[in-house]
Picture 1 (tube, rainbow, N blue to C red):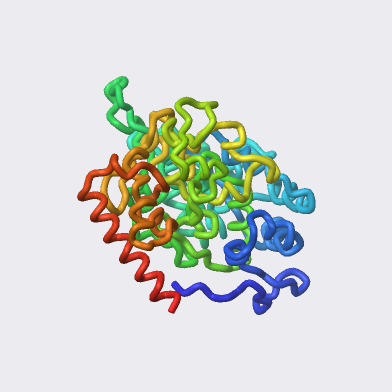
Picture 2 (cartoon, one colour; picture 1 turned 90 degrees about the vertical axis):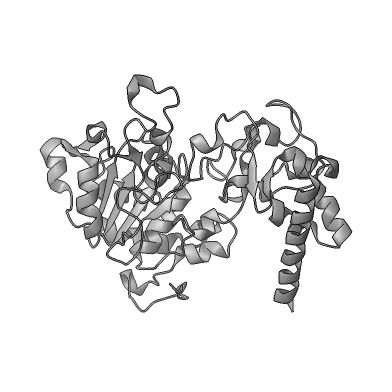
Length: 396
């Protein structure tokens, strides 16, 4: 689907004639965090459509720890504080936030919401593991999703199954690999076998919009919600995640990248050096939190010496466990570990190819070339040459 240029669209009206912007499109070309501060009034206007009752939002919780709700609540937006407070109260249904309880809560739920938000995975083998009003979350999702204009999977559990879908490696209680049959809305881990199926489309003609993370960054939900409430179509990646948030690679923007390029690695957490050998999943994790930061834009995991554990990626939990051991790389040239990748910088220099092209081909930076098998060197060098030729053609 072609993405229209709607960043200053005023054709749809809006409150007081305010423009109804595509905030995700703006985020793609702006420094992380600046869109919210630059367009607070218009974001507030978008959320106001739900506050005023023009649009209805239902938030369901399946198998979840409520961490994504808590992360959203703790987002620091001083200029939007009043709007967000009203929005939280006016969401048609949210089990954690709404003041109503029991039958009153169930009666308030819209059966044809404009936006359906799901937090938590959906158990298909043990439906009673997640219920709302005495009814399985699976049944609610199947009923409400086709009636919704937009469906948003908030967090890795709703998007991909998350930790409830982690493998039961010791076969505890004889319940199989996935104890409850936990799945995301359209994905189970990295496979398109979620509860809604791969061909599901909402009323707006979109798949489920997945906001991966354990938990999600509050900006992700705020900007995505404001964009779809304004009637715009987000540009999604192959896992149906908004591209502006999930295109950057953690490894490319890591504050410890200099250690990596020099081949200086920490042997245990707390040591100086790149954390790749102690389990960092940065080379395989796509998100912009190295620039966006957390806690009101003040910090990120690496600030306290913690390696990236890949919580933004489909397949988290199992994909990167055990978290304290080096993750093996499956790249375009086959299996490459930290010890087998650094020669790419040397090969690139010999071929007259930029180091950034080498990194694109291998997913790594500079190490010692002697550790890599000869056939791997030859294949990767050919791959890098092709990349360089393509980049040269593009520049011409």
